Length: 161
Image (cartoon, rainbow, N blue to C red; front, top):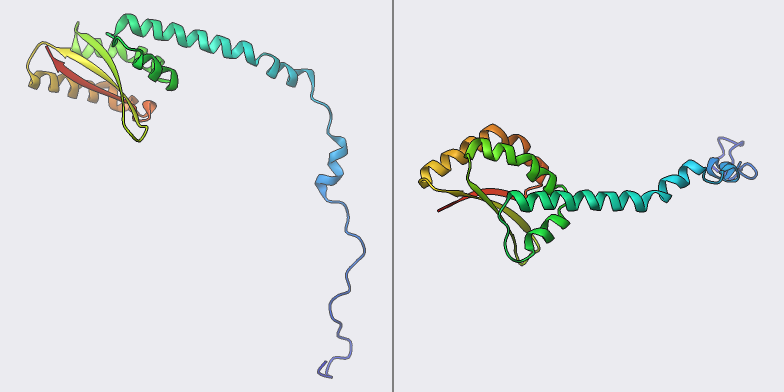
């Protein structure tokens, strides 16, 4: 001490035991889950089965509307990217609007890094310039406003026939 203040202390005058923390006081009050909370998990299997059924129905609808490859690459792709089947079904009337009565085919690709891509090939009987102009109108009219829903996994392109 420097002698100026005789009443200085070391600051180690701690109070007694600290009061119980809030989470310690509330632990004894937690009730058992209610029947409503149990019902959410009890119904989970049924919800999952219903979701799987809806997915199969959408994939079946897609196989009717699009030409599919002989292998199951597109089905596997749609199984691992569950939002795309519904999106393809929503896109179909817009494809018909901008491209007319042409064939559409699907193909899935992947690279060595695991990136997967689904292509919608528009089978175009005209020139490449006409196909490009039709795709440009489709992009401006519908695709750009909705492309964020595909997380970059879907590309529209044309194939001259």
